[in-house]
Image: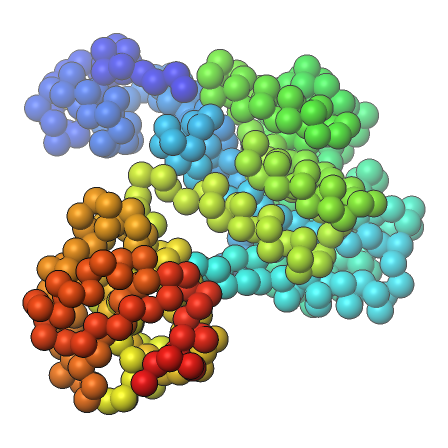
Length: 446
Ligand code: SF4
C-alpha cells in the first residue's frame, strides 16, 4: 500500500499554521494525517487540487464494495494484507448460491427457501450463506424477472443479478432496486450499457474478462464513466488457473498498488461434482475470493466451507476467548454438576455443546487462561490448581450446590489432589475429550 509520509502530505497543505485544525502547525497536522489519527477534512483550507491528489494517494489499495440492504448488506474487499498473520482479513468471503431462471417456479421457491435455511451456529457465532445469485440462462427476460421477483420475495438475503442482456437486467432491477443487488456482469462488448445501469441505480457492478489485462483495461474504461463500485470477475479454468489469477490480482492490488485491479474479486464455481465444488470453494475462500457463487445447497457442503471461512477471517492477534465466568446450561440446581474448563472459545463451546447434548443441567466454571485450551494452558502455567480454586471461589458456585464436588478435565487429572487441598472440595476427574461428557454425566456423575 502506498502510504504517504507526513512530509509528502505537508507539501499539499496551505502552510499558514493558522491552527483551525486544532493543531498548532500544518506540519503537526500532516504528521497526524499520515498516522491516520485524523482525516484531511479537518483542515478547512485544503485546496480542491490538493484534496484530489491526497485522497487518490491515500485511497486504500483495494476498494470496499457493499451490496444488499439493511442488516443483510454484505461488504466485499477492503483487504490490506496478503497473509492473515500480517494483520487480519477484514471482510469474510460472501457465499452466494446460484438459482437459475430456467427452473420451474415451484422449484425456484423451494430452492430459495432451502438456501434461507443454510445457517449454522458454530463456536457461538451464527454463520451462513449470505446471498442468492439469480442467473439468466433461459433467454427469456420475463422469466428472469419472475425468478428475481420470487427470490426477492422469499428471501431477505443479498442478491446477485446475473444476465448477459442489459435490458433483461434493467427489468429485473426495477423489481428489487431497493435491495441494491450486485449487477453481473459487464464485458468489453456491453460495458457501456451496464455502466449506465449501475450509475443510474447506484448498484455495484461486476466486470468479467478472460485475462487480467482485459480486466484492468475494462475497469479503467468503466471508471471513466463514473462507476466506482466494481467487482472483478475473472474467468477461471479450474483450481490452478483460479488460484494463479486470484493471487496475481491480490499481489497487484496490494504490493504494486495497481489501481486498475484494486477491487474485490468474485469467482463462479459450477459443480457437477459436489465434492470437488466444496473443495474448490474452500480453497478460493482462503485465497483470495471476496465472493463465490456456487451451485451446492446441501448442508454437508456448506458447513465445511463456512467453517473454513470462519477460521480464516478471525483476527489472529486477538485470542479467540469467551468471558471467564460461571455459565449455566439448562436450569442447574443444588444437585447439578460443576465442570471446570478454560476460556478458549473452541474449548468452551465444545464443552457447552456436549453438556447440552447430555441433557443434564450443569454449571460450567470457566477459568481465564488467556484464550488457551486445556493442555496449552496447563503447559503455560495458566491452568493451575490455584487459578481453578480462585475462579471457582470467586463465582460462589460451591455455595449454590449441596454436593461440593468439582469435575475437572481429564487432561489435567494431575491437579486433583492440589485442588482438593486448596479448595476443600471433592474433585472428580472428567473425560479427556469433550465428546465423553454426555456419557460421563449420565453414567458416572453422582
Ligand atoms: S487548519 Fe490547515 S492551514 Fe491551518 S494549521 Fe491546520 S493544516 Fe495548516
